Length: 443
Ligand SMILES: Cc1cc2nc3c(=O)[nH]c(=O)nc-3n(C[C@H](O)[C@H](O)[C@H](O)COP(=O)(O)OP(=O)(O)OC[C@H]3O[C@@H](n4cnc5c(N)ncnc54)[C@H](O)[C@@H]3O)c2cc1C
Image 1 (cartoon, protein in one colour):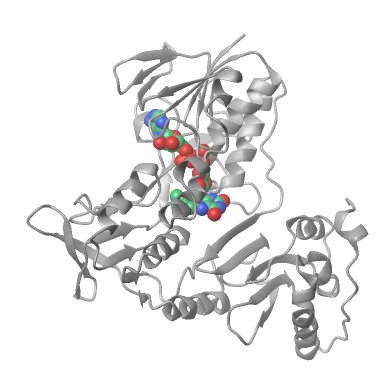
Image 2 (tube, rainbow, N blue to C red):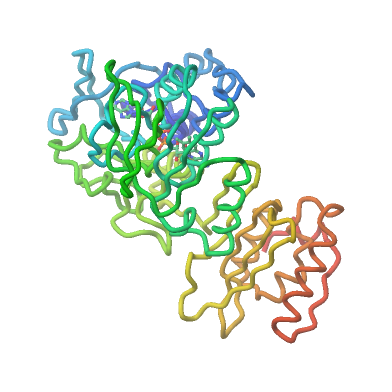
């Protein structure tokens, strides 16, 4: 029986613990300084908005851990001594391990802005960040959010839900345009402005000013403008939470460097989730993947390896989903901000400006490469299958009904989508009827 210690009680660490328990009798300890129990980070915004209580973000009852013999230690690890296989905690205690899993997640980026550590200046990552936002939003007359990614728009939505005026600074010329092609990015710009959010594109923050009590009272932009505010959200991306490992001998890049089996350069030490960095990205994936489902997959993979079945992390086709205020977004396969040389695009936007699809395909072979859906919910399993089967754009369009969750609602869009493609490409594609057999058969 091994003594396995996991640092971090997020989705990656907890999934590893659960799967190791399913497969073995190893001693399992999870250490985390943030909260007593695992919770769903992605649901934090709904706690703030009053849709749920914090307790409801905890997927397991509090008795679950004892019943499954998973010991929980509430502390931060300050140091890892890889030679003595010992961890030093911030409460002065030490803990030994046979196998160590590092699953310490991310932290919000801070770029050395003057005033970044003032009161009422916060990221939106941890439970503590949520508490800070809750406290300072009570008397907030204007908030400034710095950084236009997925977390920035979530924090904006949170504050707007409490009728707090928000100025949203986005460094790029259009919202999230490093990821989204121009059509989608512009649609979201418009949508943000329609929500009476003061969106400032191509604008960065240079400094945060303090009031006499050490609380933010204004920010200054790179255009020389001073914006009065008493809450500042720093949402300019996240980075792996690995500073405490600096002198440990564990190889670091931006994150903890791992191979396909999620092993570090030190035997018996693994890294998973947001803090892990592949030496080389898998396929087109980035070396660091800061998304929920990849953390879960890495947790399952490392559990197999530790329990005697060495396994590679194989995440399959890329997908992701998010929400831009009330517009849902899903992406399957690859559709980059700008097409590559071999790629062609097909874009359809509904006249209401709230729904669109954008398909990326190979110019020569017509093979389907990826899709963005906004405001229309599509089935993950269907697109995953089409990517595996190397289907063409024509096949995808003709069978789009198979991918759709909501046929009654969607009928007119499908016809319109195909018509647009036919007009632009001189084709005569016809929408096929939905087939449940096709939807659920495996290839
Ligand atoms: C507001 C928000 C919304 C998001 N929405 C989505 C979404 O819609 N879809 C999606 O796919 N992803 C989303 N994400 C990203 C997703 O939440 C992360 O990818 C995921 O939580 C990473 O899981 P993890 O287990 O690697 O790390 P984490 O969830 O970060 O957990 C790591 C834990 O380790 C603890 N820790 C760190 N260092 C130490 C130490 N030295 N000692 C002890 N404990 C330590 C941390 O305090 C933390 O509790 C969102 C993230 C945020 C912040």
